[in-house]
Length: 140
Length: 140
Image (cartoon, rainbow over all chains, first blue to last red; front, side, top):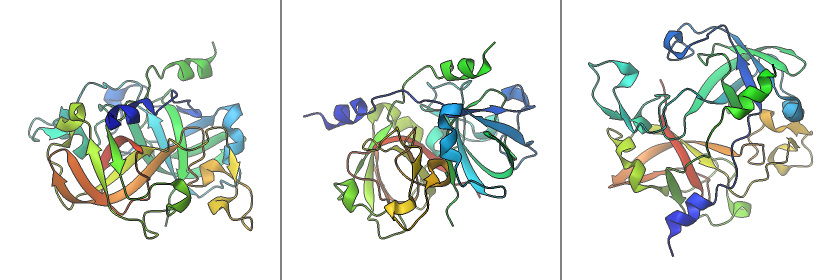
């Protein structure tokens, strides 16, 4: 029995975006590398079918927004962190590079405002049009 | 132009597990709800094709392991947190429920040991056979 194959097969479905980022950041090249590095606030538009999942989220909550870096490369396993040639070659699992086998972004943000199914959040370095996969509360 | 549809379409591929959890926890029913609630250490077996991504990870590193809760329900948008009937109905995006549209688990753990492509990590509440989707360093 090949246990590894069983595990690979056990992901039955594609990711289904629950929302999308609407930001003034339009290109990956100009985006900060982390939210804490001068990134702007943005809108998280939750798709109507998923809006019931927002119940009891309130302004001021600290949340983790998980995105899919749709412009990333999935065939990269090693990088120089921050694309800086002075940094040593490093495995992507030891870096926050967006280029990685499953290009998930993890963004700790604060909920600034809620307007219907739109959340004003920030700071966040994700570019306009980035799909949102999940939203989780920060645990204390 | 329907921008939402464009975003949904922009996730081109399935998730590809980079590894699997090998744990003494065998069923979701018996698993702690968070790693900090008495969960054991476990092995993270990285699949051979992804092993280059581990370069420069070392014992003692604090990492975030992202899993796919393969036993979760994806059609649930509201729950009572911790399955406690005394808790109010809450949107899944305001909880850490494994039942959610994209059942990603987020596990902060410490690397206890490294043996080839296997990482000893913990504490972690994920059950045996849980696919691992990504590994990220904790940012300070």
